[in-house]
Image (cartoon, rainbow, N blue to C red):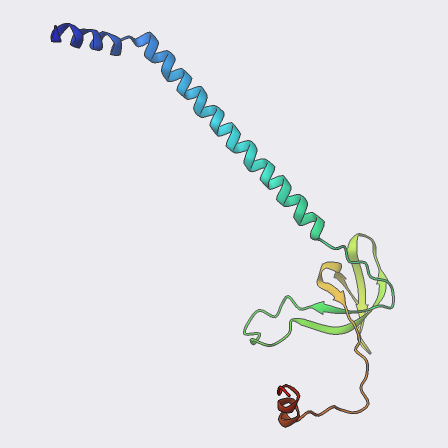
Length: 144
């Protein structure tokens, strides 16, 4: 009896046609999982790109506006606290496609890409300096 059940199990396992069909179904299922993962990744990329593009603010400058210029050549030992922005410069001419001509007092104007510029905001001039002692600050934060 044991021999017969063993023989039947062996016959089922050797059925090449049904094994081939089973393997083909597994391959189709694997391909479907791969396509679902690809679709999910492409939807994620599209949503991320749409969000990033919505965060970009287009910079428009006008003639006579003061701007700061990003110094991209300052790579060799710039110093920790040294600013990479120089200026202020004044826009002397606006060209199409984001190019601007800028100049500084007494220097010849030159063209730059608009991506290297940012608006310069002048602060209010102060007539007299304000001095605060540590004792004044200490008494200000003491509880009554």
